[in-house]
Each structure stands twice: as C-alpha cells, then as structure tokens.
Length: 65
Image (cartoon, rainbow, N blue to C red):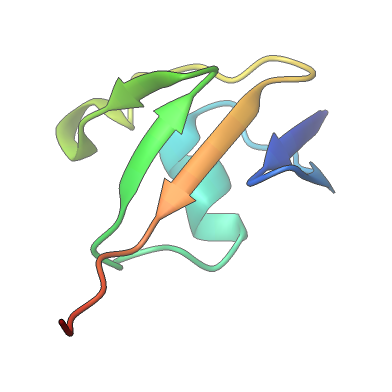
C-alpha cells in the first residue's frame, strides 16, 4: 500500500504504524507520530492500522537552544 511519510510517498506492506516505522528505519528511535493529523502515542502504534493513502508524520526531538 502507498502511504505518505512526512509528505513523501512510500510503498509499504505493513499493516500497523509500528510495522511501517520499523520497515522505514524508525524502529527503536524516540519519535513523535501522527496519522492523518491525529497524535499516536508510542504504546498505541502496534494497534493503529494503516490504510492506502494515510498520511504519517514523524518528528524527532532536537536539542539545542
């Protein structure tokens, strides 16, 4: 299925947000996620099912000032 990760199209076979993140190289990283504009807490990623055309946003924390 095709999803959009931070506005870039990706073809993934993953059914859940957690599986897609793993396949796209975000596994184990401290990140914030949203699907179609709705925040998804880390513990919920295993249960959030993705569908064709979903828009996933990933934000990594930055340090500095």
